[in-house]
Length: 336
Ligand code: ZN
Ligand code: ZN
Image (cartoon, rainbow, N blue to C red):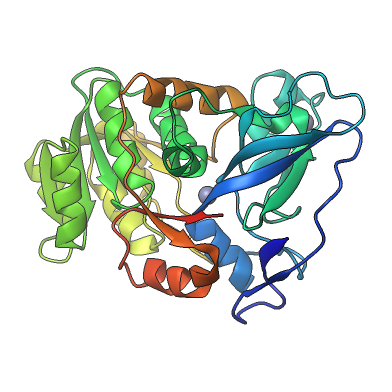
């Protein structure tokens, strides 16, 4: 099968022939149809983060495909079913986090395209229990971005407990941001889209953002404060400066939700302001299988719109360069 392989950090990925993986007991073999490119895949390929993957490996954690074979003992999935391969490739199922509905915090978890081979390939295997079914009527091109960008921002809105008529400022309108805006609106929030690119802000406007702020032209925090401040700021841009703006944009009682992962990023919190104004800082990592099922249900019901550009897997290196340069409207999805 063809796969895009990271052979060493910072070297271009190689699209080459590798053996089709064999499903072990409890696994499914999935024939990939579409595979989204997330910023995390670029961090993985570059070995940016403290815990690094082990080359050679195959990135990709927005994989959509058809179950082609079942490993021994699998009864929960069937051949021919369309499923998603998300960042949460597996979790132990029995620790306090797994049992309490926080499987995304499981210390034993494996991550698709990072600690196990992912979906930038014609086939992938994963435990059947973690192959989330994709609802009828959702195209693979739409389902792929929902599998990370969608579930991650859905969860961010959920953990922020956005209430109707609250103001939600979304910092970074790309693959994640264009969906974050939509989930914030579904929760009843007014939305402020913050980005440094005019085309991204136009996309936000088309998706119903109430206010647009160009952070290249104005101090974004002051601009949001001029609108009354944000009850919730969602930090999606991989830039520590943007996190700091997102914090300063909060009104009293506001919640900053940290989602993006700038390499070596830190933010400095003013303690007085945080205490006296009752502000919260919340970390939010992807979402559970149930969250992903919710995301698919919302999309199947016509409540969200996915903006994605299809590309061949052979263009993987060019696509990564385009994402880093901000030349992609929202999401690149490799079609296989
Ligand atoms: Zn991702
Ligand atoms: Zn666990």
